[in-house]
Image (tube, rainbow, N blue to C red; front, side, top):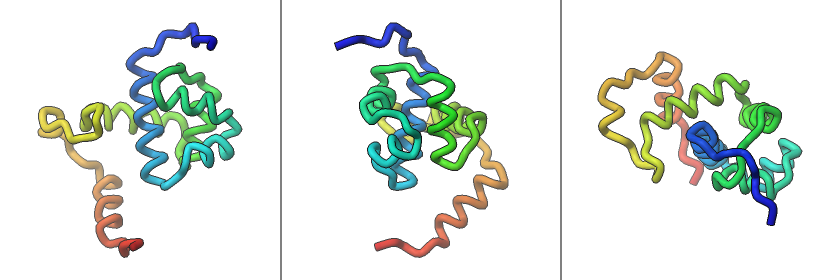
Length: 118
């Protein structure tokens, strides 16, 4: 099995976590995301599992599939990395000084007002 010669660094980890979170939040399967982006499922799986670095073209296609531009997607990934631990739980040490933007507050209120899908 060939290995990716590019180093897996903190940026790759942040983006991989953001992809997993966005995919989960939107109820997309990995297969669906692969189809939407044109990225082979095996490549997407390696990216999500932090076994392969992501390139700019892949990031652009993935962020577009989630309805965001690349800049928004990366900013959200960095912001969420401060708020959450790698296991997905809140990191209390990093949430004390966090202030929600008006847009984030609106999204939270809208989510609370949305009817349950069950």
